[in-house]
Amino acid sequence: GGNAADVLNETNIELNGDNPQIVFGGSNSSGNVRQSNINLQGSNVETIYGGNNLGGSLETSNINAITGTAATIYGGGKKAVTNETNVNIQGATITNVFGGGEEANITTKTNINLTSGNCGNIYGGSNTLGNVPLTDINITGGVVNTIYGGNNLGGIVTKSDIDVTDGTINTIYGGGNEAVATESDILIKDITNEIENVFGGGNKADVTTTQINVENSKINNLYGGSNSSGTVEQTNINV
Image (cartoon, rainbow, N blue to C red; front, side, top):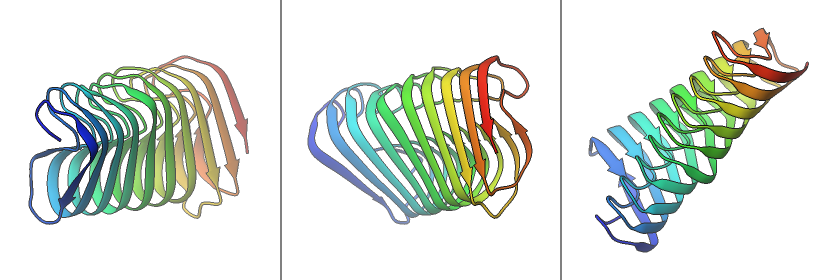
């Protein structure tokens, strides 16, 4: 995008070998952007934002991480609002994936799909601040150490949905790391590899209601509530 300008159509960024430190799909200080498209195919990047930097807004962001590496991917912006985000990990190696922004709200929802590749942590929501109405995480392959349906350190996720049908996973939290969520829903179905830990709640965070459904899958430790701290009012587990 521009510095302080609208983009009426869309932005397209191809990362095919150059190694920029920070990439924004949207604008800088202001400006409304309809759509951003970022393809990571061979570059090594520090941080990718699908959205804007400091102001303005972006309607829809699309990030496809096919090959290469990134320390952090944000589907949203740094401090600017994004309506809806789509992050697809299809073979790249990413340390931290956020469906939301760094310190930014999401208006409608976030979508994260892992089909192949390696991820350290996947967060359905935002990082230090930002409210997210709905997060949707789908795991159909690949390797990930920890999945959080909610945010990392701050902000609120209203509802998180996590669906797992394949892949190698160590730990799943329906809620956030240290950030509150209202409702979490986890479905684990027909997976081959054992999952070590599944928590309906967060790591150190409250979740009002949690739902876990497990079908034809093996989980070593299954908890309806949170991990080291956090209050859960109601939990439902179906195995």
